[in-house]
Length: 177
Length: 177
Image (cartoon, rainbow over all chains, first blue to last red):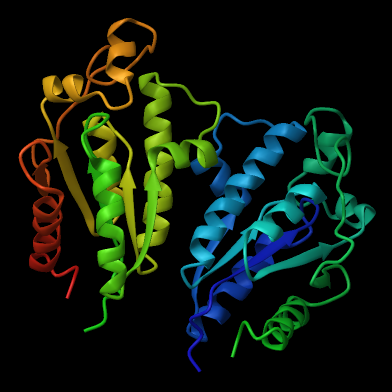
């Protein structure tokens, strides 16, 4: 069976939790299986769709709604749209789930203290020093999903294990042959 | 041959020149021929991607770049993206043409005095009275394309004639079987 069905693979999780890494890892696997795939990464989308928006709740919600709108356009035309923005607020994620079809929420779960220790980009340090304001998990809330379709524990699992969980779920749900 | 090739059908023209009407007319024809089609209309896109932006040159350019970004994502995945925003500035239209593949510029040409006489929505009257500011053609410039791929003269042609011109061009260019 050809994989021509569109869906939205919506990653959510704290900064550094592995959303983009997983998105980048899983995209070519899906392409190999015949899917058309677009990654809508947080930073790239902010540049193209949301320049000028900040990190207040209102601006974040607007940014996430725009990603949701574009992901919806793609997925309803047979494309797999993978989004990798923090998307900290539950209500907007659920709003997009309700407005689209084939919405798959993947929670990249990683304890805050692990991320603070790892801090590959030095962002958590800056956030704790108050140099970066409105930083999710430090000075801004993160509302974890209560019923994510897939939960990947990126501090315990290898990337292969996390990707397998996601692919298995997609097959079970009939989104992938 | 199946019509699975994506392209961008980019309408440009003054307010009331027939962009949306033609977009709405031609979309089901393309669907009947097997194309996947999305219309990115000016107003709908402003609501979803550009709320808060005004009508200064800078804001218009930002809005048009966003439409171009989304149209590019769709068209490179086999979808026909039909855009129907005024898109008054030549440079930005050419920028999007350069950044995307299969960009087809359709100029909905209609003399200003015809549009002012017709004025179905009463917008030209309001613009001339200064009630609406930054109105393209009245108090804001419109830069007509010099080398549009298709020019439809909506004040002289029937909608069927204009649509036929566009469809013939798409076939000639190999974008439609």
